[in-house]
Image (cartoon, rainbow, N blue to C red):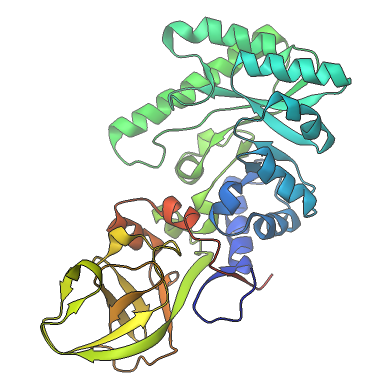
Amino acid sequence: MASTLRRTWAEIDLDSLARNYRKLKAHIGEDVKFMGIVKADAYGHGSVQVSRCLQEEGADYLAVSSIDEAMELRKNGIEMPILILGHTPRDQTEKLIENNITQAVTCEAKAINYSNEAVRIGKTLKIHIKVDTGMSRLGYLCEGDFFEEGVRHIVEDCQMPGLDAEGIFTHFAVADEEGEEDLEYTRHQFKLFMDVIEAVESQWGKKFRLRHCANTGATARFPKTHLDMVRPGLLLYGYGDYARELDLEPVMSLKTAVQTIKHYPAGTDVSYGRRFTTARTTRMGVVGVGYADGLPRLCSNKCAFAAGSGFAPQRGSICMDMCMIDLTDLPEVSVGDEVEIFGAKAGVETLAAAAGTISYELLCALSKRVPRVYKNF
């Protein structure tokens, strides 16, 4: 989206993305493949632009949530392999095959549907089998008493006509958590996954070409889980503690500008609901960002934005299109000056904590009316 209005915009630094990719490749080693997670419009960063960067840098695979997301990439010249992590209706099987898109298979019913459609048109669909090792979401259930049955179904489905079972994968539930109990849970998930692979390959008589389970937390912390390919999400975009530990850079900065400045006496109520009252003579700025842009109303009176030489506390209820910031202690800030909502100076993690949520949600919730401005690369 192009815009000539200096209101609110997101700067996406593709050079930082490329540097992050190279550092992660050095971290995992040349023998491990790299799958870039670009679902949900690449976490708000722009899936087409991010995918072009990763394709040019030499990444091996991309992952999206739906066939619509995959087709957007194909229509914009992205030729590298794409895995759909979510559901695709059986009547879209031919489109998957024609566009060289790999489909996750999470249960026997889906395997049957895809096999029947592939056989009907006389072609082969590439698939990755998903195993539920403890996320309790999608995947073949193989825990405890379900192990033998789950393995049997996977073997049978890998042998179905019209299906090429290239890969097998699972998803960790707490690989980014620090507690010993969480660490043990991740160990258990990984062991179960490896046990499933061993049993399936033994009965099937073939080897999976790609085994993958390492999400952001596991990519950063657990080298044994890297296997044939890793698939970091938030880590690639440079957010979170693990990104800082690996010297990765935030790719996005959300910025706005001061629209007006007023001086209010002590005792002045500010914004909807009168949830803030000035305690002193206050130099108050209005900035053009609100909850319609993706700034959560829950952050009202709980956050501060980078402006001038410091941080300006946000005051009063956040409105749909704007909010107020206290510039009393920042006299150098003037109308038209740039304010960083999050980015290199103000981490998105801090804003997420103020909203009682996670960084992923804020990045994905960034409104489409906010122009993405791509820098470098």
